[in-house]
Length: 248
Image (cartoon, rainbow, N blue to C red):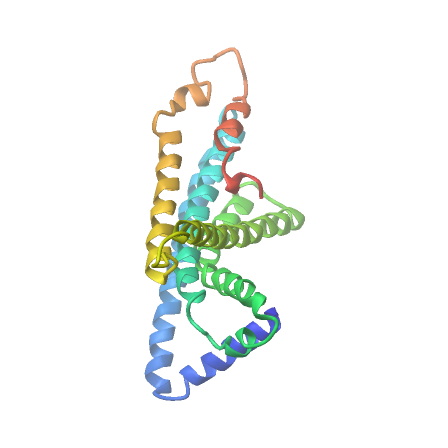
């Protein structure tokens, strides 16, 4: 399925550059250069921050864990938002899936939508996640195995974010379908699903904000406990263990 999807996008890219090639190449080059510049700035920012953290014996592990968990959570939210926007369109547009929908394998449509949602959500991976990973590897002298394992984790995070967005859309659609029983008008429309999915996503964000609103960082990092040499990681883990971004 993925090979067919990548072949489809390769044909689409070729068709895009078939006309006005010069102007489109310049536009694409400017966009790519902007992404590379942003990724480089993210790398420099995180490298400076992680090098500073690495020199603090008391907060070295705890602060690294907190920053990493918070960073993964924010990236997960960005991936989910991007995938949600893409999925709201992919599930309703043909996107070359006419033959699939007309065949007995029409059940593959959600999987094709998931692949598209995942591909459209890769920008945080290249702009934020990989530069931050390289900064951590530079600050903490991470070996090749550690980098590969961390890269596998962030790839899992991207797939998990896209899958979560798709499940949210399907759950909202199922709920609207149940609400349609007994009514002459169906609530299962693209507009209704899109609005309800965005509302559900914002409701989840409010729940995340409520969990962090009253966090006392001094207590979290045990800064007043002078008897201990290294901050305990337990309170930080318990703060993030309820979020999907914690598992990868």
